[in-house]
Amino acid sequence: MRAPNETAEAGFTLIELLVVIVILGILAAVVVFSVRGINDKGQASACKTDKSTVQTAEEAYLAGGHTGYGTMDELVSGGFLSTASTLYTVTLKDGGAGYDITATPGKPCA
Image (cartoon, rainbow, N blue to C red; front, side, top):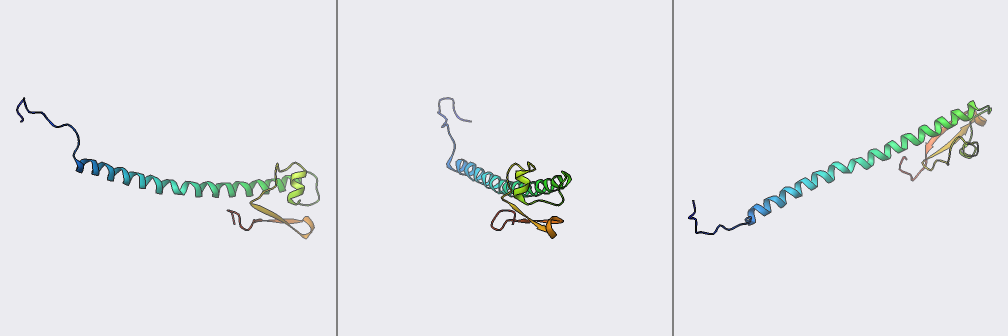
C-alpha cells in the first residue's frame, strides 16, 4: 500500500495501450472477412430472382393467349416485364415453341 501522501499516477501504461490496439485490430479484421461474403450472396440472390422473373413472364405470356413464347422485347411491350433483363437473354426455339434463358456474357450471373 502506498502512503496517503504519495500521489498515484493516473493513466495506462504503454503495454496496456498496445494490447488494446492489437485486440481492436484483430476484431476489425474478423469483421472485414465476415462481411466480404455478404455481397456475393446478394448478387447470387439477384441473379436467381431475375431468372425466375423472366421464366414467370414467359409462362404468363404463353398463358395470355399467345401461340408461343416471346422475346424479351415482346415481354416488355406486352406488360409481362417492367424492363428488359440486363443479366439474362432469351433465345426462342422452333419458332417460339420453347425458350432458353442464358446469362449475358460479361455480367455478374455469367
